[in-house]
Image (tube, rainbow, N blue to C red; front, top):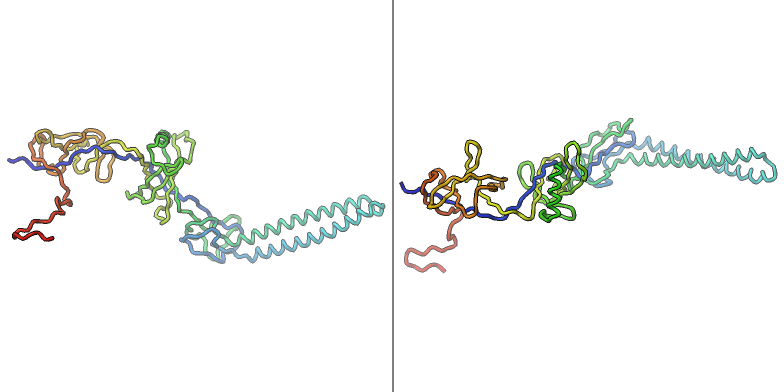
Length: 367
């Protein structure tokens, strides 16, 4: 039998960028709970599920009862001011008469006290009017922040604010968005040391550049930054809370989503990457590859694999640069067998594809 034909790739040692994987969940950068601050009936509302601006009107509570309270407070203030004028005039008159003993000293003290009481009543009435003015303004429920408004929790005609501040809706700021994650103190210390040594790519001062991987395995196109938000370690779990921040202009990232933050190290180590299809697994789970050894004979080599990189494996141990790894013809090759080996050429690569075929009829090639 002639030697079996196999194709091989050459193991090449090249710098490989390392990543630290930090799993966590996405959270809004700010969440505002919109509540009714005064009692009343909802007479107007906007539809939820849309972006709102800070100060935009979201709900309107019937203002008529509070207008009446405001008018009453305003009238009370006017009355208190009139009493203040009357009592102050009396106190001033008694002050001039007490010098001639025209009035008793007690009457003068009573008149002075009445004038001071009137001043206090005016201040209290003015405060009550200010409170009534604020309550009247609270009938217009506006957005305290710009963001995405969820569905309304009340409808037009509902009675709100009776004994409690009724929750009307929520507004969340989604751009940028936070990713909260919890890591061991040892891992946080390693990341900090890598950042100080310059091995991590920086996004700013005390900020590490990170890439987001969504739950379906796709990579988020925009780069974020890792923030060291907590400086204390939980004594029961020895964990530290970290926070990453990502731009989210298209609302692709939503609060509550699970994701992974990959921290990229700028100085990659030397390693070998091999296609996953050249790796075989034994009954005990050990990984091995076929090599074209000396005299073009097949040998089996056990390897220790690292992390997966798309359709490749990172080889931790077992291979050296320059060794020939069988990629096609594995079924026809047996350990120790002589083979006819040639370099592997991908099917979509055509050698000399730019060359012009020579004419076969003796004519010159077209110019």
